[in-house]
Image (cartoon, rainbow, N blue to C red):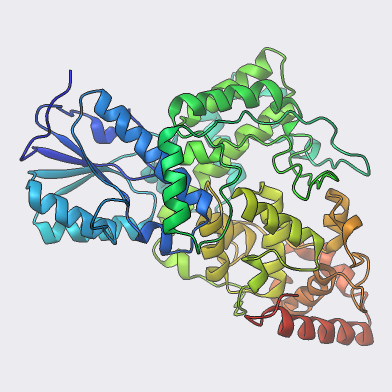
Length: 529
């Protein structure tokens, strides 16, 4: 049965673009006769960082499908679309407009995914003179309060210890009180590359052909956000819970068995510049972060695959650790340390983000591949993000806030609670070690070992000086030299600093001179290296 929208709803339930979950706590006690839902597409959410066209389209398409699903269930939905006239500028402005007209008794929302948005909606509620009840988010397996309890009294926060608590608490991959296989972490088994051979016939992810709603969104984005980065040519992301379920099944059946073994590998195929963008990765993070997919179902499906002998333990454990460990841990870090966390700059990095991060036009083949793929698909897997684009900006000394804004803008799965700690903390070490136990730094030799990128590059990863020296290798040694005193306090950097000590004075000066010259060109806003 469908109910007409109420002129003055009892409760107005706010649903944002990353809260598309029908069983959300925001709907607890919802009465379709008395209550209504508010959703809004606003320009600010695509422009406060200069968002990739595919990222914009994914959020809007998923929101419109969710809206229609609510209406089919008989819920009154007050929905502001970007192609409505006039178009709202911000969520707060649209909420003020709608709530002033409807005069609800109370506003209800589930916990927000971004500090900025939470504060703006709370301010709007105060201006309206209405209570905004913010309810706990059951989507996650650890609440904000539980993470704060975990963090209390600890000198260091490390994901590995949190992950073990989560495994025990939720009985995931456990045999009684012991981890399956006798170890908590099988990461040592999950670091293989493809070597000099190709990855072979990798099963391609299931594709979802855009329906009428999604096609309308793609057309809207192409017109309204024409100057934004990226392409929509390959848009095939799941935009409904049913599609997300199909994507999960496809991954478990066809790519999970090899996921762990090759999760750190990178590859550029010869038949096209970005012929292997996904390899054995799941492509499920966007669906989970929009809450089209429950992480419990993802974890259970992966564990079942192991229990039934369809996927090896190392792959399953590595995949589950990303969800039950990292995903929950970074959310805890975000809300435990915000709002100050966003402004941290533990390495005192001050350089500008190179212009080629927005164009992909650089002579460094690994960056050209990773950034070009990002522009084409709105996607790059975690090693491309951490050890190519992230590593380069860290070695170069780019201000971490600029790196954060680029990642938030460019990736389809980017929501600030998950993206900020991963970028500022793990990738850029901007939090000084709150998130990660050491800076993740390496020379060009790491990229050569884990990919075939270097075979198509004019730079030599073995060289740190000279015309054909790999900028990653030059900047790696320069990074160690610039931060030697800071890094000496970290036992995990001892081996790298021991290697640094072998460099004589002339070599050190040559590296520093070449790094300074490269940085001057690379960080100029109008010049691509």
